[in-house]
Length: 109
Image (cartoon, rainbow, N blue to C red; front, side):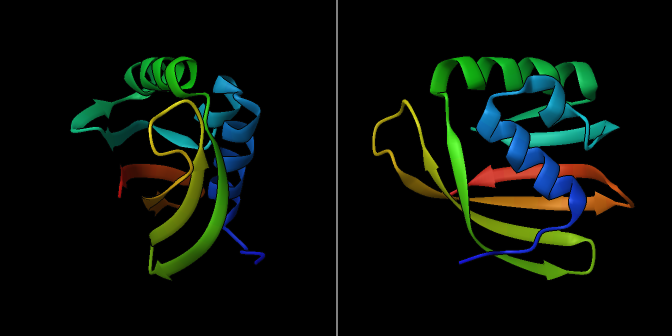
């Protein structure tokens, strides 16, 4: 299934699959927040640290399986493969966009 995502989300997933930290960070607003594994990472420096740590630990790739939009909110189902028990697994990425930037990302089952 081919899913058409808005540019910031497409950029994020393409860079994530290349394990390109700089590329993953580009679509985020400077004051964005990410919630993952029960922790919140606020601002560019904290988000970069989270990206570096999780990329190093899990080395995931994401195949976008589905996406739905409600205004500026996007829910993306991704088949995530990497170095973790239960791989591959379907995770949900809940994005909030502010213009052409990602303002918030929450990752969960």
